[in-house]
Amino acid sequence: MRRRLALLLALGFAATAPAFAAGFPAAYAPTVVLPTALAEQRFEFDLSAPLARAAREHKRLYVYLGASDCPFCRKYEAFLTTHAGELVPEFAKDYLVVDLRSSLSVTTQRLYIRIGASSLPYSEFQRSIGDERARQLVYPSVWLFDEKAKPLMQMPAGTGTFETVPEQLEVLHLEQ
Amino acid sequence: MTAHLPSRRRALQGAAALALLPNAAWAAVGGLPTAAHDASSPEWDRLSERLFPGRKLVAGQSVVQLVVPLRAAYGASVPIKIVSKLAQKPDLYVRKLWLVVDKNPSPVAIVLDLGTEVGQADFETRLRVDEYSHVRVVEELSNGELHTDSRYVKTSGGCSAPPNRDALNLIGRTTLKLPGELRLDQPTTADVTVVHPNDTGFELNQVTVMYIPPHFVRSIRMSYAKRKIFDAELDFSVSENPTLRFNFVPHGPGELRAEVTDSKDAQFVGSLAIQAPAP
Image (cartoon, rainbow over all chains, first blue to last red; front, side, top):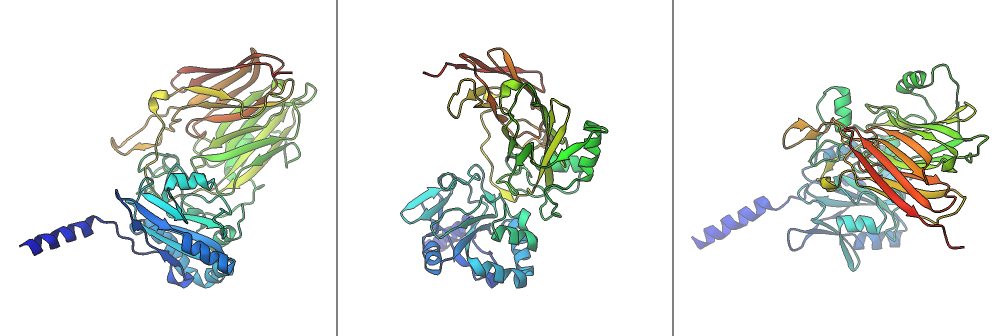
């Protein structure tokens, strides 16, 4: 009886915990970062290791924040899959792709970004890097960083403005 | 989560996309054809003929330059900067200025009526840009010439978490500040901000499933020591909490004053006492 109760509780927790599946297409060889669950339903993504790798390889980071239950994320990922032949070499030239796998239930107050010893909630993190998207968390989101986590360009909320090959190339080439 | 709206009337669809409301579909469709920054559009062809019938518009950046990012962080708040290459002197100055977003439901965002007290007709503000569109500025000089510059802007979106709206009980609070140094007899930069939702009338309240009635700042009249700096007519294409950065020329101590009227004829006043800088 006790075992059955424990199983039911475990199943109940699994049903309420966010799912962090799906993400950037494998053809782009993304580094997948799953969140660490903190207290009070907070989820932290650690960029320290990808940044260290970027420094070693003298690459930029293309950080993608997607949600497992976000249709716009699936749309962007489908676009990337369809055009992998053209885009994978362009990404590989300068970027390491980092795939932060989240869920729509991970909202502004619940999402934390860690770099080294500093872990900041989404809005504070955005303000700390001078990103204008501090006010509202939109899935999917993309950041372009150099190896020292300095943003290379102000990115838009969402990915809808770079879902054609020429527009994706505009972003990769930092055209503003 | 937000989703793109199914096909409705284009204007409704577009303007609903502007809203920064919880769960509102605030983003327009991306991936549309790219256009050159200096290209025209069918909307602009029609509008320019209505605004400036039979008049020649000189395109380029020799008199006025528009600075707008190709992709802004949010389509509901696209930063716009107007740089005038001409000082406001009595013999030749910018006397009127239009800011237009071609594809917005109401494309004329701001019309400014200027005098020489502006000193330098540079302005900054934030606009709602509904979809891939040109943003344009037109300056009319005191000699009657019209000069224009334009930028193509791409906006879109995705799934969003609810934003924090500003306190609605503060609607109309008008603040003025000088972000830089006060310079006597020189153009001095100032900001005017009105706390206001600037509701478009196309935003759907997700709880009541009713459209929120339009309610936006219609005019701002700026003066210094009772001398006109500019009169601005605004539209809901201006972002929530309308802000204008502008210049004025202080000749001595005085009151910098903003008189604001919204679309419900509510009137608000903001003022800032300016002291002469220490010699």
